[in-house]
Amino acid sequence: MDPRLDQRTGDAVTLTQAPVHIETVDLAVSTVRELNQALHATDDGTSWVVDTPAGQHNIAVGIDRDLDLVVNGHVGYYFAGMHQKGRVTVHGSAGVGLAENIMSGTVHVTGDASQAAAATGQGGLVIIDGNTGARCGISMKGVDIVVGGDIGHASAFMAQAGRLVVCGDAGEGLGDSIYEARIYVKGTVASLGADCVEKPLRPEHLAELAELLTLAGRTDAPTDFRRYGSARTLYHFAAVNAAAY
Image 1: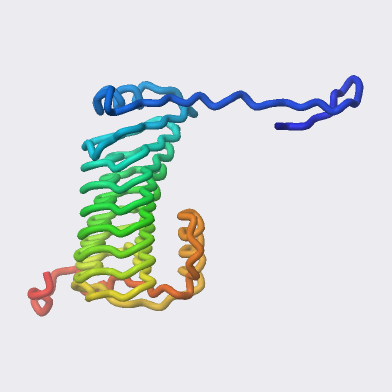
Image 2: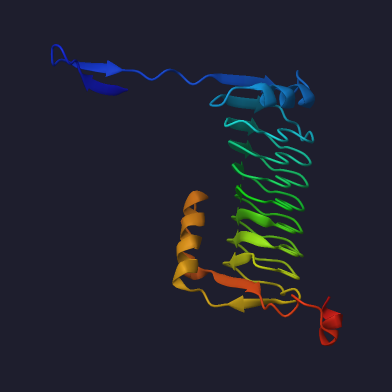
């Protein structure tokens, strides 16, 4: 409701906003292909609700419209792959390759995610409230990832740019062969990969970490985290480092 004054009489009037158009799709009735085709053809500003996903694969891939999508249930492999615009939320867990190669927009999973979450992501924000499997954020190229729980081994392998925030523990080989991505971990790290080292947590890092936590709807204190990044010893080949490649 929006109260205004009538310019002629001075009386209060109330303006109501136009209702948001909501499309509902039941994947027990419609196919994933039909849903994806409809999402690609929809108008910006439309809201979508998807029921009965039943762990099916390739749901909501390649969205290039500014829309809001809510999925009620678990999704399978490659949910929201190549995501470009809008915000999608899964009230459940996701399979392998969540938001692979995301470009922009937001992908939010309230449960857990399997292996290779946000792999090769070039932009946007991926929020996982639960845990992830191995190789979270491998070869990330600018995406921001916030994980509320733990991540598996070999996460952020060859991560080139972007930020990975882990509010739980990290598995073995974190940040192996990392480039310029930044990693923040609140819990313990089983082991660091080649060329990944702990780095000072300076004011500018606390500020960006606080912003990411806020965007993810979290209340963790930035000062409870540690920062990890590249030691920059593997940027150029050297025979003395051959065993580390």
